[in-house]
Length: 236
Image 1 (cartoon, rainbow, N blue to C red):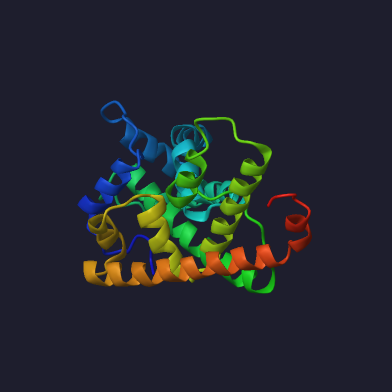
Image 2 (image 1 turned 30 degrees about the vertical axis):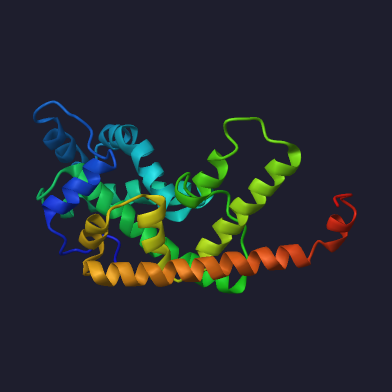
């Protein structure tokens, strides 16, 4: 599934990019000048592009991939791709909207790569986006200083959820991230994926069921692997 289909109308893409804070206010004519300088392979123009958008690109990529190291690599690839491919930018949308499209499609390709790699090796992720179920679990203890045992349990839950999300297939993972991590509306998801709303809801339902099973399975495995700790805890 393409995160941003090529046939997505420009108005919908503009709205999504704007909602994510991708648009950077520029003086009249400045964006056109920046694009022209990029086409001339002006290094200063490339540095300006990075300065203007690096935080926005990184936040988006981190939300989609959930791994800081991977996000840093992909964010760099995005800017290199934009610089090399600027001749192909037709100007049908804002530069920031095109940059958003490039970033999301790079994420799609990296997700496929990570899926292939994960089949042969279990990898602990640094973090999943600070939203959705993970955020809810952490916010419950943010109002007070957690005891060491509470913090350890919260960290364990966060790890379980991260790993469970990465076990989903690509289509399921993208829908869960869009809806439960990015808090996108069904209408936005429909625009992004090109799927009918009913299909989005049914697939998301199956994805959530798969996620719940993965979390339950991981929780059971961790509990069964630490009997000695429970026996020595002194709790009645």
